Each structure stands twice: as C-alpha cells, then as structure tokens.
Length: 228
Image 1 (cartoon, rainbow, N blue to C red):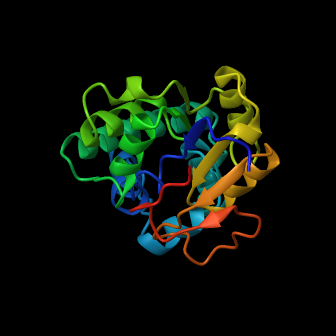
Image 2: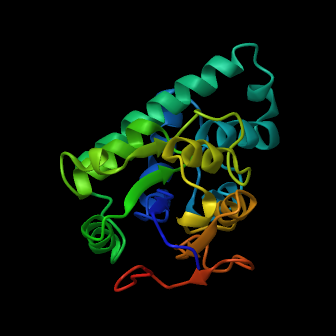
C-alpha cells in the first residue's frame, strides 16, 4: 500500500447518522412549511436515499408521487425553496445537539491530526450542513481542520459519479494512491472506486445490507480503527 497522506471523509451516515433523525424530519418540516402534504417515513426515506442530493431527491419523489406538482411552471423554484427550508430545519437540529458523531469518529480524526495526516471532506450535502455539524460535534474551529471541503453543488454530478472526489484530489494536489476515502454507502463507494481511491466502508443504519464489493476494508464503526 502506498504511503497514506490524507483521509477523505463522506459526511451523512459516515461522520454521523444524520439521515433518519436529521435530514428526514427536516424535509418533512419543509414540506409542511410550503403547504405540501408529502411525508417521508423511515422506510420511504431509506428508498429515496438511492438518489444522492437533496434537491435531486425532491425532484425524484415529485416526478413519481406527485406529477402534478412536478409539472408546475414554478417547480424549479419550489425545489430550491424546499431545499432551503429543509436546510434551515436541519441546522436547528444540529445546533440543538441532536446528531452526535458515530462511535470512533472524533477519536479517529484526532489521531489522524496527531499523525500529520491531511483531512478533507467529499460529500453531496450542503456546505453549511457540513460546517455546522463539525462545529457542533467537534469544536468551533473544526472546519479549519479540513484542508478541503467538497460539498453541495461544487460539481455537476453527484455520487455515485466520481466528480466530487476528483475535485477534492485536485485541490489536495495528491494522487488517489496516497489517499483513503471513508464512506458508508454503495453510492459513495462507487464514487471513490471510480476515482481510483481505496475506500474504507463503515455501513450505517440505512446501508448495512448494501453490496460493498471492491471496498478496501469494511468495518462496523471507526472505533479503534487506525489504518496507517
């Protein structure tokens, strides 16, 4: 194995179990704010997670479950409005301390910093969601610990496309062979592998039954893991 220089973390489901008790209720609150009778229960939301990106998930759901809404002339603006409202509700939950880090995450980040490894983020979630989670769960200056934060719409195609990893690697100025991606889902794994990255997978509550063929390692959580 080539010498490891950097860890590149996914966020949702990897750093914290944000989906079921964070993003999902935030989406539902945003739907209510905008007068929609949509409701995403835990099972449905698990199915919708096959679509990466919040705005993409909204469009996917509307096209299949509420085509009249998807056909509205202002639908594109509505998607943006819903996503902005969802982000606001999600940030409130983060600030209230309702979304703790998964076991071992804080310790792994601390150990990596002590070992001189560089840190980066590669995620489809919004930049403000990332920084809020890092500040609330690690330290007020935690976003500064990450040399590169690739998030949201900084690339045109979201996971399983490799675009976000290419974007991060370019800014780290490192070859993929000197980096390790840490993911929780099949989509994330596929994105990492297509970018020629080794990938450590730590399945989350919505991804335990997914196929992780090609992963460098699969671990239950990050507690005690040190791969350098």
